[in-house]
Length: 260
Image (cartoon, rainbow, N blue to C red; front, side, top):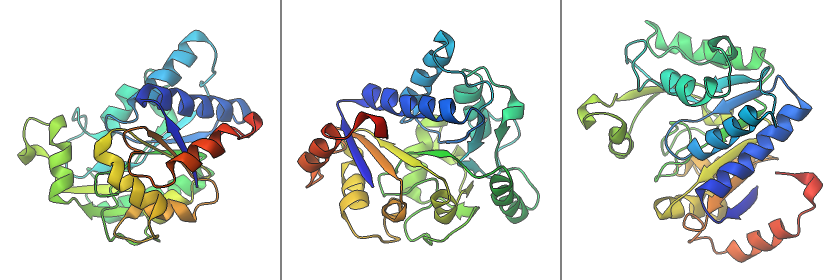
């Protein structure tokens, strides 16, 4: 696992956007897994700016969804499909045809989960998967004590996660209780997972993820098992890392050609 400490969220967004740009340079039709929430917005803004300026050609890129609420009506502005189309697909100048995600309104939710897992594999697998992290260490909606081998499935949200997400709704009562999420095993199938965390509120989760044991109580700690996982954190999110100075030194000495 590589840990990169950056000054702030803007710097983190720019760094990860550069990694995506390099990937698209090597593989123009790369499948990019995207996350929702406020944390990855600097990435999407930086990448969209590169596309607008002509520095990056994203015209053949494919976008896939990490998770989706269950039961929100089609077209609901806070469905993750709507959010990804609004914040990622459209700013990159892509069409909805370039996008794939699970069907959270399916009558048979389990079948929809299994179909999405198959679709990701049939698409050649996710080349780069963006991740955020919850205050309890969850990635996607794999809440604490999720199986580290789990596949795409339906999950029940914890009360803390519903409280955290209530800011996107008029009230917590409107936040769904269930989601479809890529499983931890599904996420680990991606070729390069990149987790971005900012703010002091994520510091404990990051410390447990990076320096703690691999344990289902901290789902993100499973990234330690991946051969090419990157964790990008700002100074506040890095504030509880015991090896912060080591991570700074190793990144500063890293050959530029390696990238992230």
